[in-house]
Image 1 (cartoon, rainbow, N blue to C red):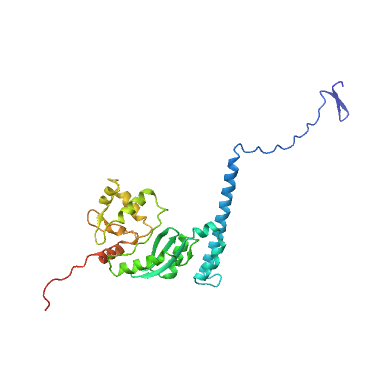
Image 2: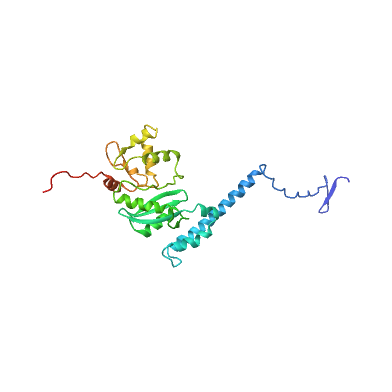
Length: 265
């Protein structure tokens, strides 16, 4: 070839131009870390389980709100819908039940390990049920084995009895520091009060009485863990999860009753 080309009848010098063949699209490179595929699969599986549980929980709240013509979620509903959860979720099921007390309605939330929360609502039973389901969407209303131990504890407490039955607690959601603080508060005897400074010294955190106060503010089971027995150094009431007025009432219930000595008229 002489290196000339003819374009529109005109001969021009230059090299012959040829269209370059397009290369096939390159395949994506495989991930250099094959074990990560297993992690991604597990993550996707957990995501699908969460979506499934959320869908079931949304159906439960719809029934609770009356969209399906049901105003209350009874034990029959709990037994019927419990089969929709996976086996692992059934073993880790969260149960709740409600009881009326002088302080209002109390909700006992329990796991297979023990009682994990004690909630209070003064507006009524339906408001307490709604509050529990907002905090624990997959909870099932059913009386568990730990509620049978919590109910006599509450009845004996409000009657003023000093010997109370033992109630197992589940504090797995708390930090190690919060567990240490709550366990130390549980050793305060009935009818006695301690200060935040005293509590900080007992948990080997001198000067950390504010941190102890924050740990008590996050107490999941007030009254079962008597954080109301901790007051300020200036003998003021201090804060409480259920309010200062409830704290004052609990201390009055636990106050030792002095018998009046003297002659009767």
